[in-house]
Length: 113
Image 1: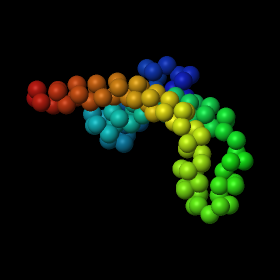
Image 2: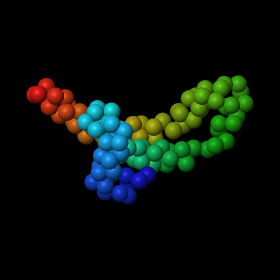
Image 3: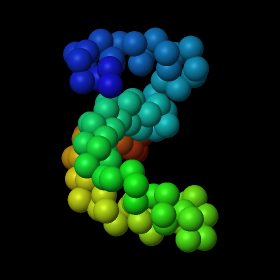
Image 4: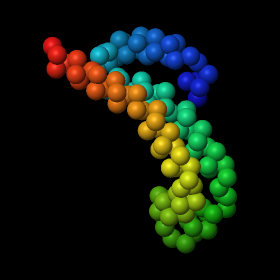
C-alpha cells in the first residue's frame, strides 16, 4: 500500500534505480510494471473492502459439497463479491489508462527514429 502514502515522484525515482539494476529501463515491461505498482494498492483496498463484507461461513459449506478450492471460490465467493471485483477492475483500468497513453507515446517515439 506504499503508493497511497508516498508521492509519485519518489516511487518513480526508486523505480528508475531498481529498473536500471534489472535492465528494465526504456522497456515496455518496465513501463507496465511501474504503472501496475501504482495501481495495486487501489485495487487491493477495493477488494479488501468487498471481501470484508463477505461472510466467511459461506465458503466452508460450499467446499464440503464437493467442489475444489477454486471451484468453491468461483461459484460462491466470486458472485457474492461481484460488485467489488467490478469496482477493482474499473479502478485498475482508470489507473492503467496512463500506462496505455505512455505506451502509445513510446511506440510513436520508436517509429520516429
